[in-house]
Amino acid sequence: MKPRSDSDRALAFAGILQALQLVQDSAYGRPLDKDALHSSLNSILMTDADDVPQVYGGRQGVHSGLALMARQLMGGGEKPDPELSRYLVTLLHLERKLSKRSDLLERLQSGIERAHNQAGHFGLSHANTLASLAETYSQTLSTLSPRILVNGDPHLLRDSAVANRIRALLLAATRSAVLWRQCGGTRLGLLLGGRRRLVEAAGRLLEQIDTSGV
Image 1 (tube, one colour):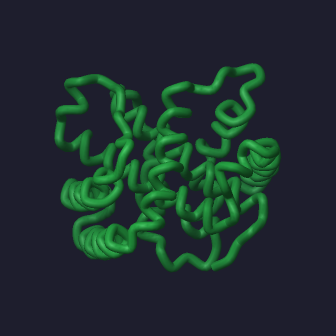
Image 2 (tube, rainbow, N blue to C red):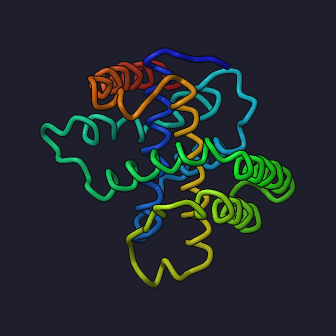
């Protein structure tokens, strides 16, 4: 799979933002978009997709992430969420570090394969599957610095089920960051005019979703 279009990059970047927003929602105890949650978690297991939309079960799978793009990347009428921006910057930095560590990439692949088998047996949202994904995150991304420090309700963050979901979602955000880079996305490109192109592509995708529903 070698996608290079603005639409592909927008979908992958929306996948990052969507997973990170779900991290925030989990950490603060806000209601979760169950469809978005399933799409983001399932994207981790979609390692042999034919194209980018298939990673998310169709363009609709990152609808909430696409809707976030204009605010987070361009500002304008609504100010970007500084906490979400901090998570995003740190995650993109960590993904680049991860890409240079063959040992961690092998560990990541093994962990995803294990979680894939567990999801087939227990289901994607089962506690065992989420715990497996969380462990994979802890053994890979969490060993690099700087670590992503998640803010939220201290009581919730001490809950093992919530903590596992958050780590699994951070893994989902990383999966989308890898995909975005594979699509030609770069941090430098974001600074050199790439933001507007991403936002414009996201707008077109949202119109297509609203028209066709997929």
